[in-house]
Amino acid sequence: MRKKIGVAVFLVTGLSTLIFSGMLGDLISQASAQSIAKVQKKAAKSQVMDASRTVKAVPGTPDGVLLMQAHALFGKLPATMPGSEKDTPAMIALGKKLYFEKAISINKTQACNSCHPIGNNGAGTDHLKTGKGALGKSSDRNDPSTMNAGFQIAQFWDGRTATLEEQAQGPPLNPIEMGMPDGKSIAVRLKGIIPYPVEFKKAFPGEKDPVTFDNFAKAVAAFERTLITRGRFDRFMDGDKQALTAQEIEGMRSFINVGCVKCHSGPNLGGMTFQKIGVFHEYTKELGRFEFTKLESDKYVFKVPMLRNVTLTAPYFHNGEVGNLAEAVDLMGYLQLNNQLKDEEINNILRFMTTLADAERTTAPPKEEKASSDAWVTPLITDIPQGVYFSPKVYQCFTPKVYHF
Ligand code: HEC
Ligand code: HEC
Image (tube, rainbow, N blue to C red; front, top):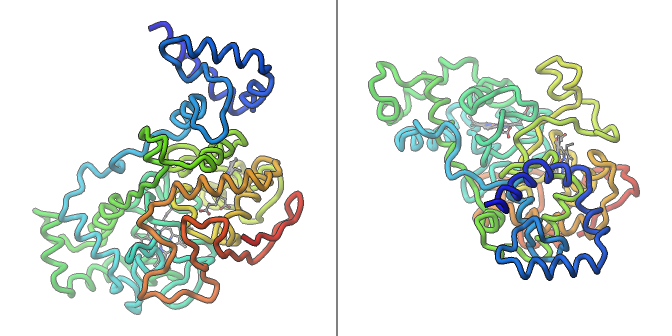
């Protein structure tokens, strides 16, 4: 019992300080070979070799410290999304149909699935630099994936809408996106398509006039709450230590120890906080969340994106400027941590990132959608460093690099 309390106290008070101050690394390197041997001998003797006693990290092995860090900093992905308690099968089925419905755009050419393709195992993003609307205009933001989106604290790069319901009403009325004049005209269109009136009635029983723009949003959000993806990372978090390779485990260790996890934490490795892009070096003149909150402290602040499926969702960042995941990782080290990551660290982190991908999802755009000229060249998830990447621009990091993987 005393031991358990000890571990808990260590977890709560010690772990975060240890990790964030980088002391963990120091602690490990300071421990002399002699003292490590002593601790190991003692640990082997003890009946319960609890995590806090493991001093030496064995490369490629998920030792106790790493497991404890992973559970404290990432945690397990919940089985269901918040808010899904009231979603019924009828609402979800209707929402799915509406997600693929092109009649909700002004010239009937675009559905949610056009920019966030999930059909044919898409990963929820179209791989364009920035979203392209029904009338061919481009927005200034990259399309995030709709997969797992409902786990986040807010929607959009600047978090300007709180819920999936609120978010779903944005694109249909956005002149650059689907371009419809108002919610009423969407309801009118849907009323004219058989069998929507019947399906809305099933999804919203007891309502006199269920085909409304509000109910459209409720159904789409209910469907989006089913878009949960899992990868080998989750098997590892569930206790299967064989789920990750030695290199992937080293990648997880680097991700934690260099400090990526300060911002990319929780079971989606992000999506939970807003942070400045360019903590140490300027990256963008775009004001980000400031435009929505008008708070000085929100200048250049964006939502920390989730990294689930990140190997499948190029290009990267709010402006889609970085097409190469290795460059995105390198740039993060430079901008956010003032740390010139070693090639080995970058490679390992990339390997770790492949474990966050759902094996059933691909980078390929759905068959019915043509890849655009600046489309992403599809790598296999298992091929990350060998895949074909392009980058429109090479950033001035500590040492400018051109990535050829
Ligand atoms: C023209 C392309 C386009 C269409 C059509 C479109 N979206 Fe988006 N979507 C975007 C872009 C671009 C963003 C990011 C905008 C921003 O953050 O300012 C986005 C953001 C989102 C987000 C927020 C995700 C996050 O992580 O913040 C969700 C959820 C979403 N869209 C769902 C939908 C749904 C549902 C529909 C259909 C009703 C839809 N989108 C239609 C381009 C599109
Ligand atoms: C101080 C907070 C912070 C730290 C530390 C941090 N990031 Fe980020 N990360 C962000 C923010 C904010 C963005 C979005 C920036 C934007 O789009 O302009 C981002 C974006 C990303 C993206 C692009 C994801 C996408 O879908 O576009 C990747 C990949 C990434 N980070 C990986 C890392 C890695 C690897 C590390 C550690 C080397 C790291 N980050 C450290 C805050 C952070």
